[in-house]
Image (cartoon, rainbow, N blue to C red):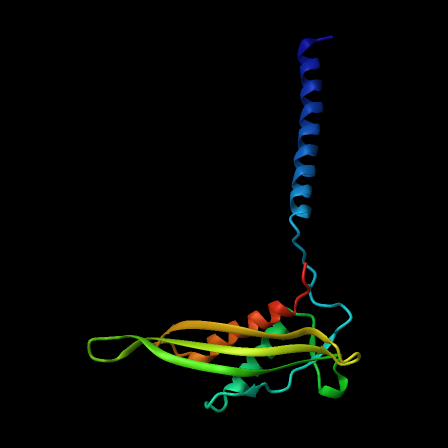
Length: 174
């Protein structure tokens, strides 16, 4: 047998096995990390009713902005459909406990450059069929610093962050 032919056969066998090992290793790495493309919310709950959150602060109208942000977050990042109370499998309810904002930095001309806002929200997610809590009462606290030059209202970004934390806590525990 020609030594060159034997070397080629040995290389093609090794190269084939090497490629197989690389593919197998990649599959193990990707599957073993705990990542999933499926939702982490309960599968038996398909709809949620979100009444306007209560507002325990002196600033009126914040509860509407907060509720709107939570509904948008649910629509964007969950399989849940927003439904009227009578048709919903579950209810997400809560209250805005505290809202504060203050100046962080001013210019030499006394113009506000940076502001900070904070909000504390208590919520619970309830199964409407069993009347038991899916997520018992929990409190979320978020603080954001904003450049005043931004056109977006101060509360909008803050309530988006609060909504993200609430939806994260609605996910099943690992």
